[in-house]
Length: 113
Length: 113
Image 1 (cartoon, helix red, strand yellow):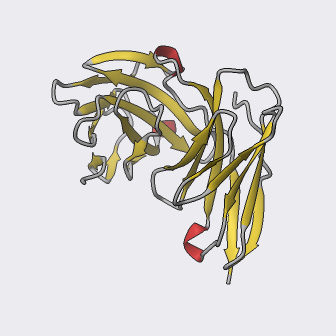
Image 2: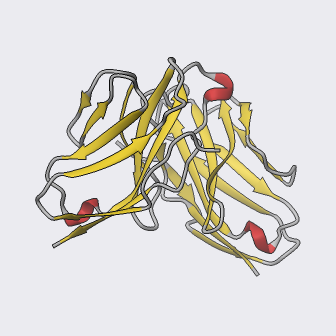
């Protein structure tokens, strides 16, 4: 079966711009979570969506936002990009809440210059 | 903060069993132990999870001590492709605010030829 698909794989943006990342979960999975990975902070939870509703949120500024569509596909948006937003952004999906384990995508590598 | 402690790195000879320890001395009665691994530049991969009984699947075995304060992930016959960072995570499977993974720094397992 198809895995979790994240697009684009690589992205270069300039400070102050905004960016939108996309995630298509495994078919039938209704929970989609987003994580940020940086060398300094490691893997950090951003937010989780379930049935188009944000169910859980990590400790990130309001510049980071997301949404989920009726087909469970999810997007995350980062506005007013800062150099420190350069990271690997990972999406993970599961049936409900990850009880049986999450399936992660390969991520989007964002570089802010 | 992560609720687990893992050694930063370990070596293992190819073909031998890799035993990765994890300390979770403050684990609550309703928290599960999960293991994920991350191969360089890829998203984390779910391996196995358990509550108090030992578990085995096609990838690995999970041994949880009787007091549940520590566990060991066992890769029975390590190959070079098992070289990765292994994360031990504890979480409650009750939905809502618990639907997130709190990653620590993990153990870098280097399988040597």
